[in-house]
Length: 211
Image (cartoon, rainbow, N blue to C red; front, side):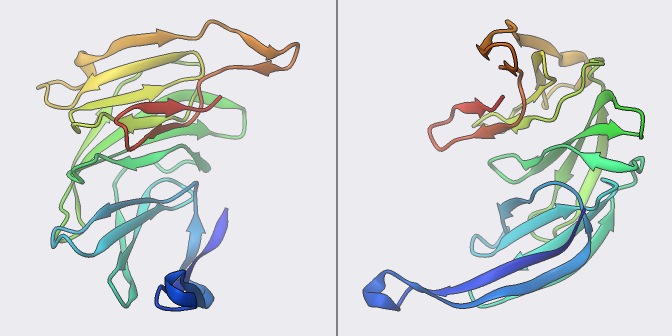
């Protein structure tokens, strides 16, 4: 697991407007972190929240980025099961009001069924609220999580299937639809399977998935 989160400062007035680095390798937070970072705009429309999950997937570390400061706001225990190693993907909905992450549970004996955790997010306070467990029922493992462009639908992939959940439904788990099944295509036989892996919502409103 990573033990520091770094940031660099850039002055866009340098080099004739091309910008230049004025400081680098500044430590924003120290701890023991899992995979990746996720960010959304603050409720004030100016600042940004940057969230990093702990290596157990149980604690959310909060960084507030303002026009001139990077602040360690502290952490919040999300009250979810702690795993030996958290491996997954965390993401905000485009409107910033929801946060979801996958739990690909590594318990020392290989991969176990994928869990999904869904929260409401207060963009003003930075607090996670209304924890929800979303049952996936897929034992093949996986990582990818992404919201739709309108923030309503949550897409989750195991290595073999892609699922859709309606976050407006009274029972989100029961809204599950299977929207794609892997065709086991080998891009370079015999080793490179095109399994589903990480997901990313691009600016054009489409979700792209790595293998």
